[in-house]
Image (cartoon, rainbow, N blue to C red; front, side, top):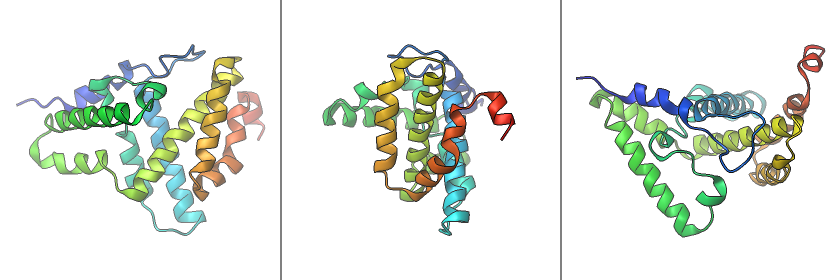
Length: 192
């Protein structure tokens, strides 16, 4: 029997993000998931090596790779719609869960447990993945603003407030030490 999980996952590249906004540079879910995994890994390394709090960066990065996998079936629901009200958010969570279960059914039984645990990461892993997801959105806003796209000005401001409101020292460390480099040109980055 052929199983479709990985072929379906490869379709994340066909799902466009930020559909309600004009984009200077379009982004798909696969690109976004890679960036979230990169950032989640960084936050976990900061937690482990700077803050001296036990953490598995590899596990957090793997969970981040799959944080939007349900969008293979649901598409990317714009944030203002997804979080419009509690009923909408609850309904969408149920749709996401059904999509995740459908995806799990496309794996051989011996593999399902590992992926199910990645789809439903634990409390601390979940916080770091959510922080990385939000950080990725903020970086997207910075890049769009750098390209002259003022459409992302309000999103940048509100997303930065969300990041600070998380109260995570890993996020504050990342912002303090890395975020301004995203505003630089390639020549400026080469000179650092």
